Length: 394
Image 1 (cartoon, helix red, strand yellow):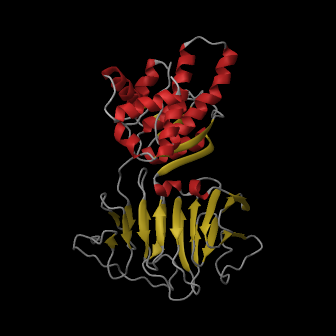
Image 2 (cartoon, one colour):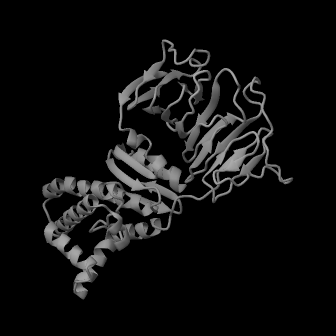
Image 3 (tube, one colour):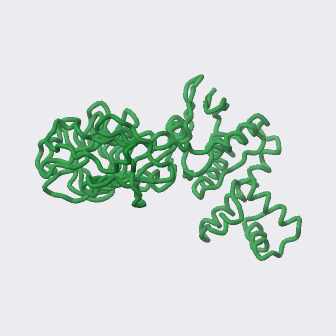
């Protein structure tokens, strides 16, 4: 078949002009490629054409793989398979691989039952008490008068139905009265801080902040993990985000911090921020720089490792794709891909040998089952198995 004949067949399908055999064939395509009639209809014309082109590539590749080929030819076919996978992932469609052993098919079937974890985010109060936040809510608004979910309903703090936070002393040692919102695996959460700053907290992360910011001085918070910030502007009170190795100082801007790994990545989308090693930002006026600090422009990312900070240009869409409901990989290593999967699907990753050098590019919706990740891995030379939520890489 050609791409034109595939497009013509799909047109007949949606006009209810197919023969029973043609209709069965189209339904089989949708089933095999993780799509459905409704999701295909929701794509724009460009995405539909990409899907058709990729389907043609997959059919061609599948036919080639069914015929015994010299080893050299199989290697030459690999870029086409990888390209097909990347495009499919880019529009949120999975890919079945022809010729895999039945045990791998069973892995796919099992992985399709593993969805993002649904544990509740928690709020730790100043007195150490931990509250499980309502699983049906997506965020909270921090206000000294009342703590509410983002839909306006009250957050109950204790058995006496208390809903009002105890005020903090902004001039205290930075610990008294602090609140901490923590997210488990597979769960993101949104916050509006006392100054109006908006925060998107990624899975397996924690944010610590006071119930009220000081009327003078800095607005200081602490992050573990990853978060995206839209900081409320206040030139008289710089906003400082501390991680375990660095400080980011802003006056009002949009940026993302990922401190999940040994390299802390700080990406600027709008405005201006100063990135400094831990202990250098506090006490500086405005965005004044120390000798160890760097000033970022939109589209730049600060990479900090072993105390040194390097500035590079990046794709900001990729940096904040998690906030918009996507995994977005660009030439990512296997360990990077699996680390993201582990954090989202509540997995344990076990390596029985050296990590394969495979690289992965593409987008996967965070609403997808683990099966979509497995399909991508099957396109490489990675050998793996699933035991419960333990993924073992051989």
